[in-house]
Amino acid sequence: MMFHRFLTIAAVVLLVGLLVSGCGGGGGGSTDPADFEGEWEGTLSSGTDTAEALPLSLSLWMEGNALHGTISNTVYDGVELDHVSVSGTKLSFHVPYAEGNYAVLKGTLSGGDTISGTWEDHYEDEVDHGTWEVERDTQLRVRSTETRPKPAHAAGSGKGFLGTK
Image (tube, rainbow, N blue to C red):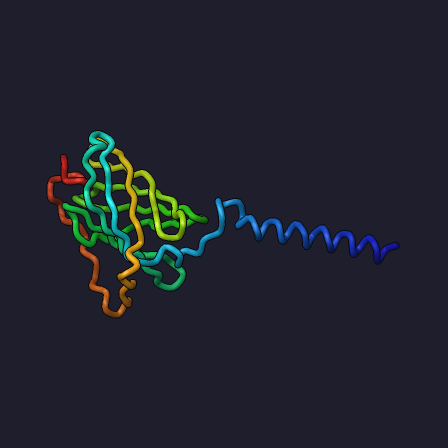
């Protein structure tokens, strides 16, 4: 009788463990941060002018267990990302620029080769917002950290992240 109870409890514990690990901990599917590695190209659209989409490039790579990257658009080239966070298929990061101003981009990886989401630009006392989408450039490989140039920190250009302020 005691042995049967032990087997029942062990089976329940095993089943619960399999269910929890199969769900990825409740984060919308489990994705390794390394799944975001690569060169990405796409567009950034303003919330105030959705007809105008500006080019956007994103380079993401792993260093140790952390995801790092740079972003470029028509105004800023190779700005190092800050506060990079991955949770399941969700990615978020800050783009510091122009003396304390910053943009926050949040996106979701779908299909393995597309990230899309929203952004907020915190420029002086104003907040602008919009959407963005990038696709993995399958022709480019992530550069080795030994050959990757140091990312630029954006100097104050007197313009918001989109260059429209």
